[in-house]
Image (cartoon, rainbow, N blue to C red):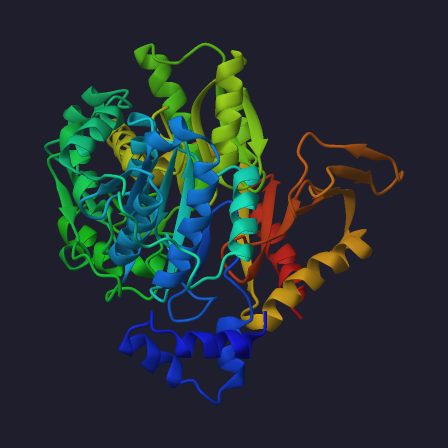
Length: 571
């Protein structure tokens, strides 16, 4: 793409508003800034689009949203009239311009003859996944950038199963986008637009009835309801309505919401990053929890698909649990609760991603469950769930990944903070009834299953040069695979691109079940797993350290040693 030519075309376009023209005029003469905005289109992957907001082909704006929607509409139209009439569900979060982008997507779909069901106001991501399945839609669109900083927005696309778009359809959307002009390609008017229907409270109630059906032991909550207290924050996002309501229906009497963060605001004024992975965002919640004597704190990200918790360590201080730790606690609890209440299905299965703690496998297998790995992303977890259950090979009780995403039940095919919030609260209440905090419970699990520790390092590589650096890093590791890392021998080199496994000592090559993803993994002689992969949504390479050892100190020592190696990769 000739970025200067494209920039001039946008400057001259009468489609843009005066304000949009002014934004582009302000960068005249700044060739580097112009290039960063117009060097290419935003890339469309299986998760859709994500980027910073602003004018340009490589920015999130109403024109790039219309452009992607037109391409998606053409993929849907190719499915035939019956598929088209099933329509598309559209949802959006609290971010700046999210409602505007959602309306723009609905307009393009309608003008292409595709019926639309759009939420009347912002809703959690899992409710979109639910709506697609509940109403038999052919697809779904969600305008959200999840937990990214306020400058970002995004556009996620879903297929008829309620999971994110499968690769073959995503590739077709990307191909059509390359052929269409961003400004003039979308169809914006027609003689007979397809109907656009609003979804609201009726859909909320259907969704919540499914959420509440996941409760295993309501009596455990009732037992401590008079004294058990928790603090909740939606971080200015979509969880503000349904999560407190679900917790009330669970039987919770003392859910204290952080008032400043119950305010819907795409600028996220009280936090640097609206991400429950970041403990600093919980500072207001911690103050309230200490003042009120709360047992634990729960926070959902802006589109309410991820959830994080902080737990009372017993001395009035609060500690953040990682997504790995939270998932292990929840998996162990669900197995026990389902056994107690007779709800554990035959052939029970747990699913996790390749970068998620191996402690989950240990918990599953010790309790008689199978545990399977998938690539990172809930579309792969959803795909594996459907495959196992449709073939009769297993019944999935929980799917999760380390980045604070949990999927329970069969009515969604994505991360679901609403259902997870209910089950995490039930779990915390049950342990409170045993005289234990969740911190006590975690320490008990380490004693039972062994000691594990994990860390994820984000090697941020912004800008045009960053994309090249990311590619060079992965290429370099493939050209010269390490045989030793941090003074420890590499036992196996695994490349998920081609599914190959190489035994370093003997040179023997074998194949894995999984292949087709740009991920490298090193199994170390000391039992640690190191995984390197570029992020699919942000300009960074992620390095995952999965360690185990005789005690927590031994695990921590391994993590620190390998973290130093990971940091050196950025140099």
